[in-house]
Amino acid sequence: MTEQQTWITVGQRSDLIDGAGVGAQVALFYLKKHNQLFAVGNLCPFNDLNIIARGIIGDIKGEPVVASPLHKEHFSLLDGHCLEQPEVRLPVWQVRLEGNVLQVMRPATQATSTSF
Image (cartoon, rainbow, N blue to C red; front, side):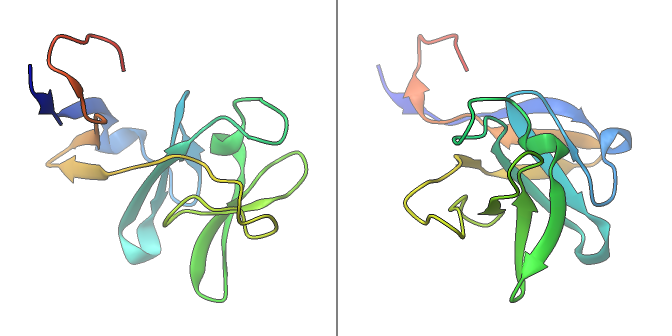
């Protein structure tokens, strides 16, 4: 069995909201001004709640970030690290828009695995 990576369709272009996150387990962010997409874990490591998609988008010293809606920790949308506690991270996925189809890269798994 070999490891594989595949793209998973998670939505459509019309699901994207400028400057806001959408998603359940993967928080997807679209920054229209820069035509950028980001995908990070939705589970906040500080309180174990799926709330990152409802965070506040901004940038700190030019780095795009999302602030957790409860305690306002800032997470880099580039690599998932917490600016206040760099040892804490959100997982980050590759994300793309193929025409109108929004996709994230499935992490490498065994070919027979059906879980995501």
